[in-house]
Length: 436
Image 1 (tube, rainbow, N blue to C red):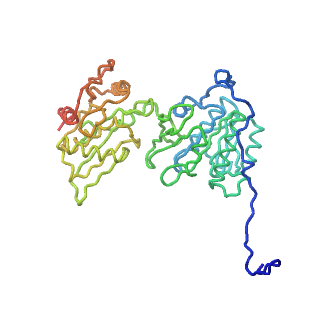
Image 2: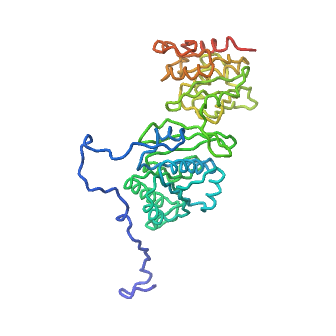
Image 3: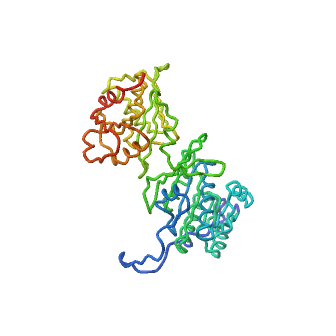
């Protein structure tokens, strides 16, 4: 309307869009009960139940907690749906009905994947639906032992005036699933897409709402998959589960240390083995290093599977404290098997591998090394050394370079301990019996 009929003014009308306020109808956790003394609260339910997949149970902290919400993220095609379908089949055989919600595939497509995995699933129910209200209505009547939603970005609730996958839809849909899980004491697994930097889409809002957050990681051209927990209200956040992707699905690796060092040659230059810890599990990982005179003006530093800043620090310490001049050398370090080493205990092995490549002298194939390297070149103590040594001895290693004065509390582990206090001393003892 150009002219106001009241005041006769022109162009005085402004268009406004009215929307219904939906925040008052948002789901909330409301019990109406007064505060209770912690000692007086009775636990009516079992603590956990297993999925039939040992590596998944390990990451969950020993099993699934009833009423919990677990978010599993990972790149497309990494194996999220395969892992959850295998877990759903095991739980349906042992505990009763399991409902699998597929928002991106039809029921026939899920059936084809189940057939490839050898899953019949008499107690496994597939539902291809994206409307969350319909999903909860049907699921409520079935009283399942587990609900799986694949994926959270595909479902929506009519209460949120936004497209599926938007931030408001993700928040409201996840909140409804969480409240439903707590009210009926049924665990819920949901999968989530990841962004380009590898985090779950939705500005991390989902990670704050759920109980457990897991990432399924792995190199695109390797068969190994690592399930890593980054948040767990019921267990450790440092546990990892290791799988191998085969034609019959994800298969647990019973001895991952053997896998990571199985292809190591005894006379390889720039190769060292570190007994690292992933949560409570000791893993032996081969670290490879390559130094080469730089053909460009600026020498390159490449870190695969280790922290880039850590590599820069170790290169500086080797140059300044050990007279290994890396100023004109390209330095490339790689942790084999697609695993990522984040703890400082691997510093000594990384430095040994770099020194081995620079001096063209191989490290004793029966030697492993563990220790944190300080800026002055000193070797510092590491936690849970005895567990690391036991794993190294089990795989046939005879000697281990360890920080000095940390061996007094170590019980006999079947491996010779070589004490070192500085990085220069460690390089001398680690390379002195090398094979030319």
